[in-house]
Length: 240
Length: 269
Image 1 (cartoon, each protein chain N blue to C red):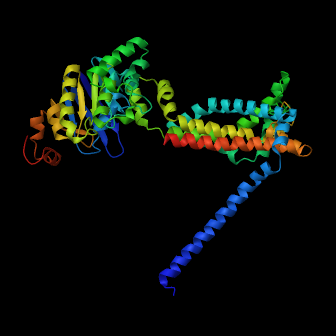
Image 2 (tube, rainbow over the protein chains, first blue to last red):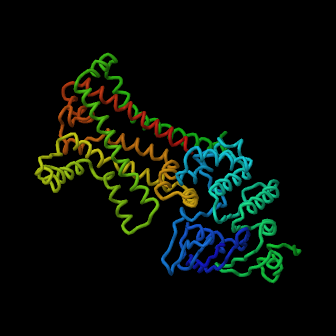
């Protein structure tokens, strides 16, 4: 279970968010560009620090302004996938996936074994020794996911997970991503601009507007709010 | 008959000619003196002077001191450059300006400044002297002078290279469990590597060419403080062949430096 209350003064508005996600549940964040969706992910994973608020994950307090707690990003056990995937360009696929395990001082034979399993599970075994600069969008996405999942995170944050995947492969990748999230059985937050991502990945939808939760509910409920201008254009001419 | 278009064409041709002439003249001005070094000495005389002790001593001393000073600059300059590239703190601009200062400071000023600081009666040197340690006019002084004048070349380049590394990689590494030190060692430094190496090469070259500060602060003793530029200056007055031979070695090293920096920076693009 993840629960977040975070306030942070941004340049154009004050971000003030309260949300929670249960294990095995996927919450999808939608909203205009610059509404603060990616900032929410950064606040949760520890790349940014809230001005005030409280973040707890699986019973651990990750941040609390009242208790003056701020667990550094490296100790939060959160898998954070960035929009561009941020694969390390000076490393191979296997080295990227092994990175987190090496940071945790896992013995080398164990790293080789775990990484090998992970690569096979993600259909990346053939690419183990390939430099990441030579991968396609879909392959990059899988490597980024493998790199995060191999650490068995307690929460998964995905920022536009399919934006760099080419159109033809998107549907298949979306299905694969949904299955991986289900199998992992941890809370998951997805930021997307894509209606099909929202409908197929999300158990719940959350509309963010200028740093605040403007609407929240099941995909049907939120996408039914046609009086909202953003929802109307996001959901398209007919209701899903 | 020459029409309007013809005049335009003639004007452009004349301009091209003038630019080409200026370019050729300037190239000649740069290359002719360097070429003259090679024309004024026979290969036999060159190799004969390579065996002279003044040449050998200067060459060994120069390579050794420039290597040590570059290593010191890299050791201290890398963390400084990384901190200044990544963190905004009160006084950062002042520190940046101070580290750049030796680039614009005349070497003679650097020499007398070092002497006033580390000389026997210097601000710091007097305490060393009380313990029987003297710095001025020793090989250590040569290295200090080189560090002083060469450090900005590395630090500037290192800071620019660190700033060019996308922060996203560092953020991603943090979320994967890397401590700030691990991020620096495994992500930021490897990604900035080619810039760091070319900065170190430039700094090495500047240290190798150091003359003014060295002769004032370290003196001109063969085998101890007489580096190649000092040896050129000294032998020029008697043994011109030795001076030219040393100069040729420095020319070759300079070319190698430029070539190395070009190759390294091109590969990273």
